[in-house]
Length: 253
Image (tube, rainbow, N blue to C red; front, side, top):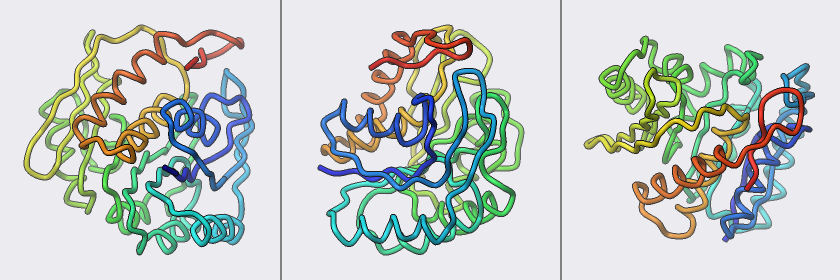
């Protein structure tokens, strides 16, 4: 079982390809990676992002796809429109589930995908997605509407589904209240996954959650079961997070 992550390199290890590979390994899936950018960061914030050229991203993709039987792909930070285009071009004929974590900003507020990239994500790449996993701010950017409550989440999920994603999972951690409710829409039905908010806010939760979902899908779980098990996994990882630096805690799993 082999999974591919296409994302940025976080040198503090809390997010990006390092977090994805750790998640794959923890769940019994072998991971390979295409690095889209070098993010200079620590536990406090992202200082600078240096994109890898689209040409080098494509070369990374091609050598992996021609050699390995990829069972599933997860995308994270794609940085710019050129890279989104390259990813779309190289994955459009791949017969494997694609999970898109639409990383738009860092937890500290740094832009991680430019305007052209957001447009190409909406126009092209999202159409390849078996599942897209935005948080509330990302979902608002994709659907163009404000989200205040679960009814707003459901309406936005329908709008994102119309962009072409087969399934939409909007994570509810940013909504007010003591419970975090994630909403899955498969084009027909809504499914709700609820947990008590832990009270910690580590970096990389979106990376780990989407990678865990992909891992369970590769291992043969249904989408609903994969999301449920991944939700349990990420909740436990957040509970076990530790403040190893001066900023956000880092997940231990």
